[in-house]
Length: 495
Image 1: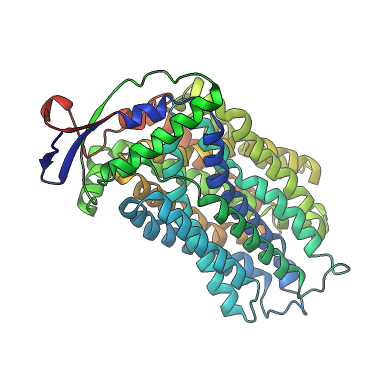
Image 2: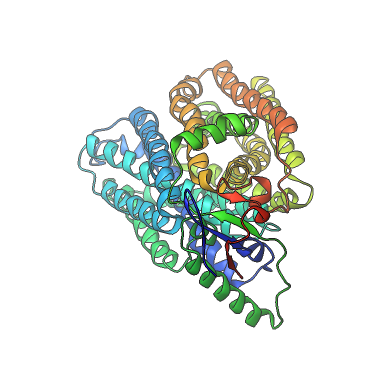
């Protein structure tokens, strides 16, 4: 059938999105989760290792003339700055050139920068490649979350997205335990152990890169960008694979959409979509990212100093405590994720934010009263972060599903950059000073700031969160390229 033409290009009718959403869970979906989700493990390991080896790097004989404050302050801020810049830079390219191309490139950038960090010979080199490592990771957030949401069926999208984002904390557990080994000078010399941790991260990234090559491009992105035949082939192959696995035919897909194909979306369209058409959703996204960024900075930038300063925990043992905290972080999305698809987004997002904020207020009060030990403080942090981790992961889920297809990666990048810049750049500078001062009131204030912003975000979510559970992405936010089928009777039909 001849294709209809619009100002933007060809116009097609397709049911591919409906076919993707009606797929049952299968090995095909597991391959996507493994290929895309494992990078958060690397990110968690990377950030945790740097925090835990800061003391050793600052000691004579480490091979670098650097102070602990420079590592937890300047290096941390540079890593986050790189992540924010990378998110915006790669996010724009992800919407233009596709999810797959960019999630391969960004992982390669991360791999190379991590490997070069391992051979740091001077402070400036270490700082430079911490920035570039963050630059690669920032791009991963936009490319990966876009691809996951566009490939995973609507029925499972919430729990899968939360668990994948929460897998960051599996890496944090590994990083905490790995740092214990790296800091043991009876095993590795002081100038070798920390380098091996970065080298290991690069090796693991290479393995993930090899696996990721087999993850398909998003058929939804392909449809809009004039590559409908490739989109059809990917979906048809997935359907055949899943039918063979299940031993029965798939149910028919319900729903078609007319798409006016285009090559790119302008910044004007993106701005109009986010700040005029969906401004309430933008307020929601901004609130969620700000809240979780400050809460995590309030705890993670001070946990080591608090344990050593107030509870006399040896610096070499703080990794054990952090491993416990990280496990609590992972269990939150793992155990609560399903409820985001069943109970619903609004209740679960607002609930996790509010509960974690209230629990952190309670922790601050108990700490101020001198009622906590190192063990009970860690238990309190675990309780807070069990809920906060699910809430923080839902922030990424939220901004990746409530904006139109053409702006998805850029929306993720924008809110990640804004929220992370506010909490992740100012956070290290504010919270490192408060929690490292050795004064109980300062640490209490840090906790209260994080708790207050988390509660505020929970209140915003209670009013503005979108009912997205079980709904297709196109139903939650109609693509900018979409039109009603009756308006385009001559459109090319894909079945």
